[in-house]
Image (cartoon, rainbow, N blue to C red):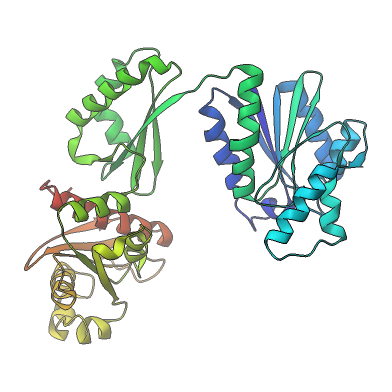
Length: 413
């Protein structure tokens, strides 16, 4: 079954809102053996929307539309559907009651715009939206299915999970693709592919391996369409472990901060941070995990040298001699944070995130990271590049990974 995703909204085209719906839909549909043939984004233009419907019908079996279902004048999806399907809007009592109940439960008041949400194309089937006032719509033409969903991500996702997929499974007896994701940190995609070359060449035809890189991370994804191959994939994961054990962070769809949390709880250890160039990014990652107060004591954002000296107790003469971005300074930051917060481990970062501040000896992207365990410390220098946001992100990920390696007694890579 081929699918086209049509995202509607001027705000998407001008970059005011990032189109996360399309990427989520592509991944979600793939789990059920549905191939996304095309994904397009168009503005709030009635003729363009109608044209996109016509083009999609030629190439695809299922057309999923997100956005443009609201009650304001720039929401044109229902009008476009009526024109394309040569129908009209009619009042739907069931949708009206759902909208009314939704607003009453949130102490809202039904007005004319809210009421208009109950006007839907005559030949459509409304899909219940439990998190909003705009119902999803299911319309069929020439054995093609058009599904219109709200643009609000959590509304769209809930409708896909609760309304759309159950109908598609019933209609087409969809299968399910089995994926196994392996999170790796500390190794570039090309080097990873080189290490896994023989393994990849030995894979059975029904098993597919994909490399999914992002700043500081490469995810490996093993996939199969046949649920009977799940055990085979699990055996393949074990083979990868044998090849690159030190680089594998998780095989359970976890992020590095979640893995760190579990390790600290398991070992009954605590952590603190002393951040300069990362500016609290590591702290944010750690505290994003529910229950992190069990192992995380706090942080000092030592962005200025004054804070490094007066709060983290790094001597001025050390900073003057070696510079704030140095092994000597970052190690003292980590050691002293451990003492200040009375923790078992502490992470410290000091670097030049950019886009200015680099020198010949310390170019933009130079970052020192240290991990202290009680009164012992190890550190490493990284060169991440010249993009500020990416440098901060990679430094935070690598710092947490250094802690993981330390806890597991791996060599720092």
